[in-house]
Length: 156
Image (cartoon, rainbow, N blue to C red; front, side, top):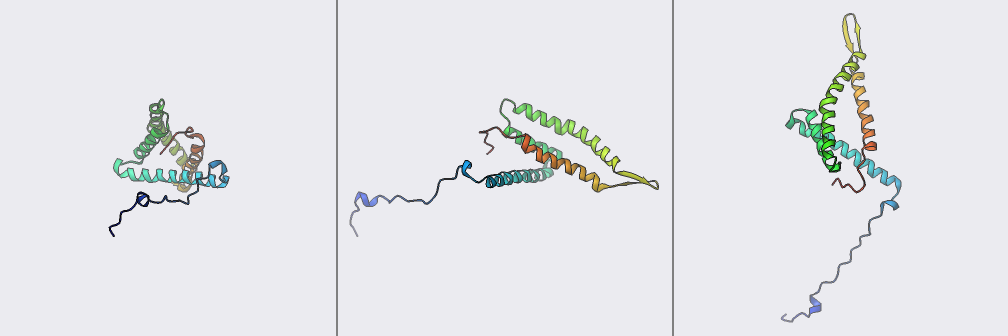
């Protein structure tokens, strides 16, 4: 029991791990890469909705919540030399032009889908709400295609 351990007996044996190196993207199947890119984009867009809904009770309106999320997103992806200009443009679009054009467009869409029968205005509300839904879908498709971050820009 009182024996002394030699120096070699105190050294632990090196542990052998059975981990293979990650597969480079160039060698990954194209379908898998597309699935991963689609999934991450879809999750990011879904989280934008979640964040907007989460901030709405605090900020009391969805417009301000959306503007805050856009502001933070642009703060992360825009290069530092144009960051302030990009954020200013986004706020102008959301609060200035967005409200003006949105109210005019919504009024025109409602008038287009409203008919008068026997002195009563009847509005096809399903069609009225389908128009902005289709436009939102088009923007959701166009945004990732047109607003790609530069190579090497880490969003994490």
